Image (cartoon, rainbow, N blue to C red; front, top):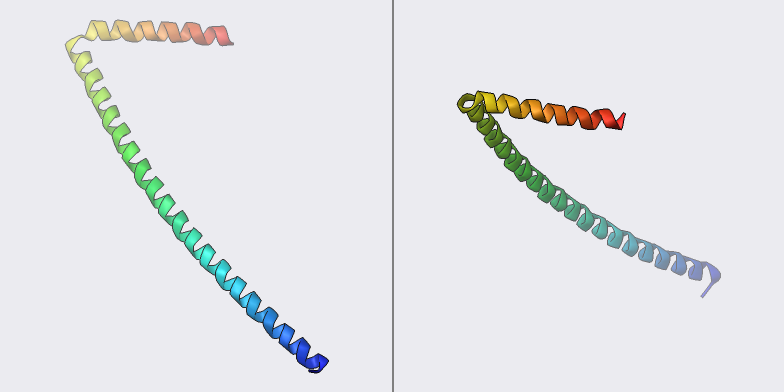
Length: 95
């Protein structure tokens, strides 16, 4: 076997190995991409559910406050004033 034949044989072997490695890498990237898309989709669904739950809670809180304002306006005003005073005192001590 001549030197040119061995070089050609080695080159062909290297190409086959490179092609096999590239195919393996492409498979891993494709699987990783699919897993990433699945994880993103799952996270998006969870976030949407959490936002729905938070929105429902905010709606219920708003309805409660509105009902309390109509049923007990003096108590509601006194509570808001007290919370404002306490918050003002806490913030004034920080500065």
